[in-house]
Length: 91
Picture (tube, rainbow, N blue to C red):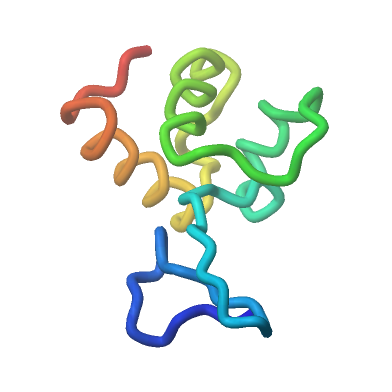
């Protein structure tokens, strides 16, 4: 399958070799973010839906050291706070 070149990065239609369109659901790859990976160790999945990482970060914030978060992970948290948290990180 190939990602449709004219679609947005998340939610783009995927096309199979037979021309059928499939919807790609937005998700976050757990392994890309070390603090998230530590908070989601018990899950038997590789990805979380778009709003799920924010809930995990909020629930486990007391176990995080924000000064040690990588810039890309901090950016992920900030995007989720703006999109799903109405600008508020509930910790």
